[in-house]
Length: 148
Ligand SMILES: [Zn+2]
Image (cartoon, rainbow, N blue to C red):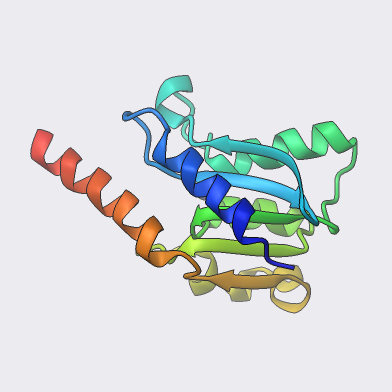
């Protein structure tokens, strides 16, 4: 069941991330209990796949000592990329809630046919907090464009 407080927690994390990072955050929860969370750490750790989803899923499976998160939901401020979607397929996540749709052509809902587990078993709800989440990304890239 979607919990708006957990989504707000993710939005708050994304709002407070380093100004170097694309402002995205993810929270893994079982029911109303937060298991793990992260923001993006691509620039700070200089690792291209340190997306918020990747890091929060890593923390959750380590904490729970399990390879499947089929009782867990992930709350993300932005629709997951192809890499993170594959990861969510692999851990059999129960639900994916994201704040804003991605404009990338390889994002989850545009590539759902690649993920049979997600498409038949996982609750996927997107665009839930578009008013708050889309400007985060938009302003970040506008600022970046001004600087270069
Ligand atoms: Zn990703």
